[in-house]
Amino acid sequence: MTARLETRETSDATTLLVVGDTLHFRDEQGRYCTHGALARQLDQWFAAFDHVVIAAVLEPGPVPEGFSPYEHQTITFAPLARAGGTGLKAKVGALRTSVSWARTVVPLLRQTDAVHLRAPCNVTVVAIPLARLLARRRYAIYAGAWDPPPGTPFSYRLQRWMLRHFGGVVHVYAPAASVTASNLRPNFSPSFTVAKLDQLEAPAAERLDRIRSSPPSERPLRVCCIGRFTTNKNQAALVEAAGILRDRDVHVEIRFAGDGPTRPQLEERVRQLGLEERVTFLGRQAETEVEALYGWADVNVMPSHVEGFGRVILEGMALGCPAVCGPGPMQLDLIGDGSRGYQVDPSGPVALADTLDRMRVQPVDRWVEQSTDCRRFARERTIEAWGLEVQDLLEHDLALGGHRSSLSAR
Image 1 (cartoon, one colour):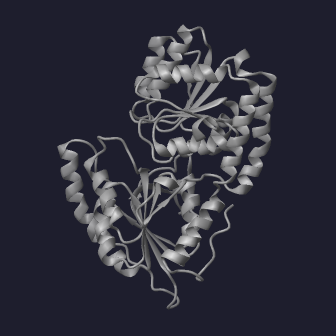
Image 2: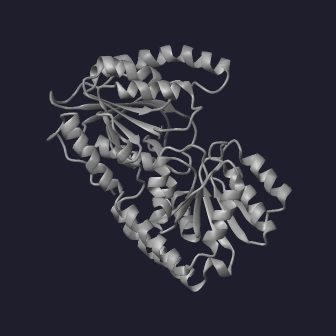
């Protein structure tokens, strides 16, 4: 299907094209919705343009929890067929579908003033070289781990190579010191506005008061783990760690939020280990429920094998909640080598159990120091701060300065 753009009202009106396989839904009011944090981030881009075209995946059905509508009112949607997966059959299917992606994207690239690509995905394998040929103003974000361990898919390695030769700015999740290519810029992925952080000050203070009056060393340690249930997200390590701590006579309470393909196996494993009273599966949660979960927890655990940015770590820090995370330079940058949490080897649960046990008995002053630094760190990485980065990029790298100021985030 090829989307046709409406005739522009004025000759200087500008149009942005966004391309990727990001999931979208349409709500009862006809508004396009995607993951809440992403919608707020993209609104910073959309505010600088008169028209927005999104070429992505549009799913039927009701809008899931955690999805939000864009604020931009003038959006044209070009649905892309969903394809990909593991195995030869899936790869052949993606190759065939790529022809339809190209047919949709090529005319859109010729009609728009700037293109915004969201890699890595099967769609951007096709869109990156097309944008290199057809778009004068081009930008991409690589939302996966920019420096992953060996063994990552060939298509991801190919896209990183193409983006280094993209001829346009590429945002990457990597510490500033490790970004050396001239067209790469370090990036972060915020969820909250300044106003939202102001609202979270009271529950963050209540969380810290609870730790002061009832330290984790004197009660069960509270642990939250938020995210899609997959092998890579590695929630299994936390379940096994709970069993190890139980055998050590150390009590923890774990609450998982999210859903996904590995959840049934983990629920069965919890039953096998007899951990039903210690481990709770909450399913998909609304944004306010997730915020309450961060406020309830002493520790926010994200034991992924490979992670791009790890936005849930930053979200938890808004409530002053330190994190335990898996490997990667970006994750180390987030937790600050101890000041805001700890990094562990996720390949086995013993290291995770040991780290949680050490945190449980750390002095209250240490909890206060970590909470304070978490909240400071979150204050420096808001939607507004990210919007200033977008505005600078639009003005200086895409030469769109003066058209319109960045959106005042709400």
